[in-house]
Length: 260
Image (cartoon, rainbow, N blue to C red):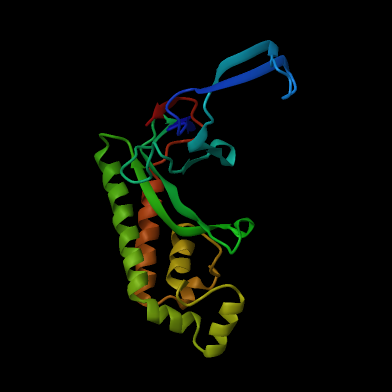
């Protein structure tokens, strides 16, 4: 229903920009007369006629603004994005609060959302036009939600968090076993490279397929390739997620309330 911070603009200038235009026009007339050198008497005269006009216009402009924080909705209001940029007056470092307001049924108890964080930077080319914006880092999280004061919903949310942490640790610990099962031969490794995959990224792709339902891995054959220890962690995570999702309220109910 709502979110903070909203789109924010700032300027590197402390105040308004003062602009002053001046136009100056000058007209003059001068004359000098001198006698020849052999004259016994020398005389000279000069005269000057000048007209000077000065026009000045002074006004102030609002300083140019740049975006330091942008936000909005995606997926027809089911997602929110925040984009942060550094400036002279703000920094990307340090803690920053973000707030989301959801509208739920009055009987709502718990649920979860997905959080994706991406850091982008400019890769300098040989020339300015060759500069390219690239993703420098990316991480995803599952954020469990529960109604404050609901002890059982809080316990279910904590179980999901623990199950996800254990799943990721188990997948990382079984990296070599996963590589042997997914890429048993050198030919499989070369084939994966041509498909845009790699053995180094295999744990992340397996985790994304299990946690977020990504199609980076063939999920129909995923269970057959997973080591038993990883398969058990997947089962525990799936059970914990279903237990939390079961606490959702009836979406057909007309009674709603806003939660933050």
